Length: 120
Image (cartoon, rainbow, N blue to C red; front, side, top):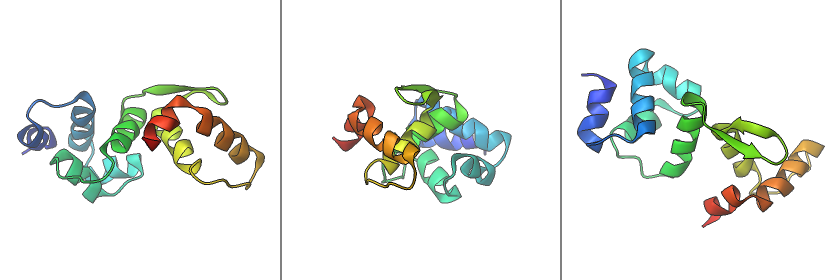
């Protein structure tokens, strides 16, 4: 049984990002797809089987950015993959003055409408 079949069983009509994730697993492997997303294989399995209880919107952003080349228009960095945008938004939850880019991104992300949607 393919990963696409497994996802279809669980989801019915597949959202485009679930289909992209399942196809990537079929093309490479579940472990390789998970590494590409910088997540665990168990997370990928739970998402494909519609059993993931965490932040599904975060997983969607990561899949869209890493596998589907979806970008976000960042006022500081310009067009960047959605998964990288998600990573910066996650870092912006707490202030860190590690370097000037972290400070700049903290300020920019906390003013960004995309970041405030995450907080809702």
